[in-house]
Amino acid sequence: MSALSLDGITVTRGRRRVLDEVGAEFAKGRLTVVIGPNGAGKSTLLEVAAGLLAPDSGIVRIGRTDLAAMPRRELAKRRAYLPQSPAVDWPISVERVVALGLTAHLPAFGGLPPIWREPIDAALERYDLLALRERPATELSGGELARVMLARATVSSPEILIVDEPMAGLDPRHALDAGRRLRALADDGCTVIVAIHDLPLALRIADAALAVKDGRVIAQGDADAVFSDEVLSTLYDVEARVVRDGQGASVRFID
Image (cartoon, rainbow, N blue to C red; front, side, top):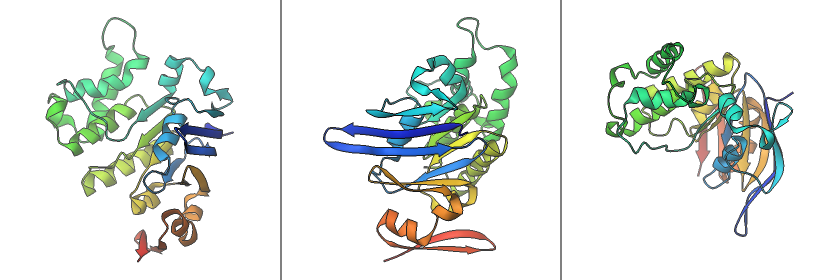
């Protein structure tokens, strides 16, 4: 049984179908990358999967439970969602931003229980943020803020993690490190879903892939099968070659 599934999902905006009868399954302990050109519907798919956008038709399930019928607090405890290009508008510390990822787990009153101090410290260390813990989040660079938001999304060790372009704005070292961290979460049993444009990094970290074009899923399955010359050429409307060697894999687009 899938940890998370979408069945017959349709989303319409104006006269345009952003998602058209989309079906997808995401397994426990697997990292699935969602790939496709700009405007394909990837972000909308992730919003629906996270329970933040109600589809015009179709059902999203966590296990056997219809997500629409799940209490919001329970949903917030079980899944974490990180949108594309998140922002912080108040000058609160990095540590407090990360702690906000625990909101659904905390009592209504009384502040932060001591039991959660260790996960916060671990998340700060995991994303190379210990030296920045007291800095106002509004003073961070784009790459630093991206790492803070990844720490916030993962601090509670959610069952399901849905992230939209989490490596955007990161330098190569931190992008690779973030990829390794997401990979490790999946290895520990988390269902990880990542929208990503960096195809070589996607190949490095993914178990499975979902290829989306014009609001439809054109391929899904094991990453090695989806990352084929044929699928990528169709997906991006340009001839593609996947090159695999002892150092990993790369994708070449031929003009």
